[in-house]
Length: 335
Image (cartoon, rainbow, N blue to C red; front, side, top):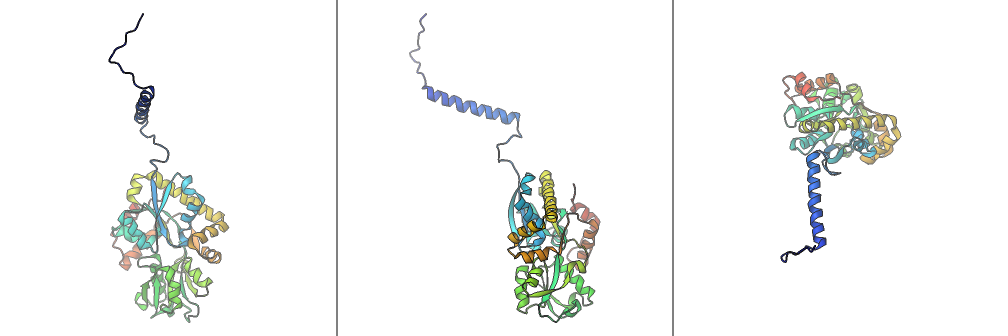
């Protein structure tokens, strides 16, 4: 039997027909896969990036440095981007206010003030450390006790910081009160040179700056913060409420990585010093001395936070009408 060919028929080249078939088939297959498995995404896509910040050379934030160095964020399935390294807590809180941060290691005081005054919507998911600050005077200063600071100029990192609160507390205990000395704000990296130059009589700062002053023979510690307010809360791990509402799993993973870091610091002091040296650019002797005055502890005491919130009200930094209810909405420290 003979097969008649249509004289109008023009066969396509085999290569062109095969290519067209391949693209159409591939598109059909991919579309079907997306329809059948909408949660399936190509590798490397769809993972939420956590925009994290901490304070410059602040040894209190060693858990963040450890998590970055030891890969604890990766172990918990997190992609972390360092979105800011700030010089003081109030500056870091401005990152939350502008919406450029998802999480941050920051002092409890600026976190409370920003949340109470409505300039940042945050939640506190863990404590970072207790203690870890000191009141430092010049190496050759005649001052031997806080009461002798009456009439002098004293520097703090910023108003409404834990160092501000601690200084006011030590001055009150010394009987000279808030008006007994002139309190100015200076960023901690600049404090030692200003102290050595005689522009200030003392400074209250976080570690490692007090230990740096001692190690460099530029100053001596008049009072450690654990002597002013024993086991006081200092820094916290905060997240924006918008991030918490949308990414609960990532927040829990962030908390787990933080816990791993604190365990690592406790069990690996030598390696922790090395990591601290890398992120603060200070000598091992400074970091070792400073770590002896910092207690890393993830458990945030609600009663201690309440005590501090009430004090901030008294100082006029906040006007929290119902502190217990305020703290109940602010603290998200479990699971």
